[in-house]
Amino acid sequence: MSEYYEQSSYVRPRRRRNYTWAVVALVLVAAIIGSVAGAYLAPTYLYGKLLPYPPGYGYIPNYQLPMLEPLVGDQYASIIAAGAVAQVAERVGPAVVGIINRSQVTSIFGSFQQESSGSGIVFDKAGLIVTNYHVIDGARELVVTFSETVQVKAELVGGDPSTDLAVVRINPADLPLEYRDLPVAAFGDSSKLVVGELAVAIGNPLGMQFQRTVTSGIISAVERTLTMDEYQYKVIQTDAAINSGNSGGALVNSAGQVIGINQAKINMTGVEGMGFAIPINVARPIIEDIVRHGRVIRPWLGIKGVALTPQLAQQYSLPVSYGIYIEIVPGGPAAKAGLRDRDIIIKYDGTEVADFEDLRKRIADTGVGFTAELTVRRGSDTLTFNVRLEAAP
Image 1 (cartoon, rainbow, N blue to C red):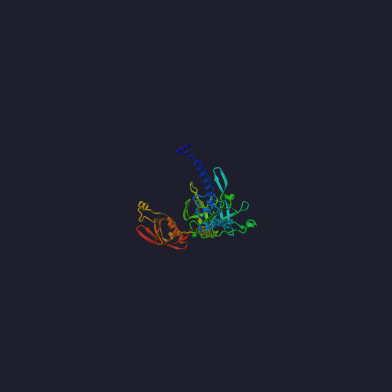
Image 2: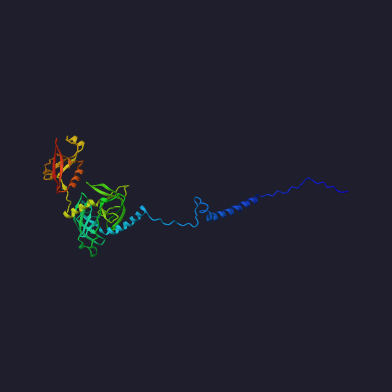
């Protein structure tokens, strides 16, 4: 009997394999390979060639600094200016000297000698030096210093308080042989100054301890009015540092020409970079007059007066509310021409007079020996006088 085997429909299932760890391992290997390739292949072969460098990318293969570009415009000018300061100092510095003022002071404690110092500019080989009037004011003895060991006595040629200028003289023969050929500063033209151009100040701040100190800046303004004591001065403003002892020193342009005589600095809390100098064009005629005559020769009208206002005119019942109400100086040009006390000058050479400063300027512009036409109110009458200006006594 043959056996009969019935085929069973049951099939033994295969065991299912778990591929999770294999996938994780594969991903890790791929990431490592990708990162290595990205770190090397992309920077070397892709970035900068097939692909642009990504933002913030720090390393650029074979990077070289760009070639230096030539300086143009203001960049070039600033470097030139830096060199100009050194050249200016070399050229003008030797002509800037120190000036010591020795005066006698009397107080309740007795009499004693007081010493102050400033600066000056040699402008003539004969030993002529210009400085500020306030540097030499009240001096019993003046000493010009070229160095700590080379000092020589000076005499006052003359001074002018209203322009704060003075001239002193030394005898070059009193100097050691090597100093006798005096260096002389060249004067420039201050009328050509431009706001913003280079300005170099040379002087002796704090005396001989800081002799021939050089500071630089720019011309800040060219038509400033500075009031010191009872005088008004037309000055150059600069931000080049001007300190005590710089007074009378040189303000110089980039060509090495003196365009101003250092005069003052504003000393106020919160104020920096405001120094002032007398324009050399203003100083020139003053210096020439002092050297020629020992003083400044100014035209003179021979009056005293006050500028009228509507309030004054109403208070004193005057016929006009503008002009100069005058008092005559006996023997002066106005008196000789026939003007009287209580006349009112309303016009000078056909133009209305604004105030006394305006009248003073017009007189100065007219000059000694020239004639001015004055229109005057005398009561209800309007009169005209021709006045020949004379030198002020």
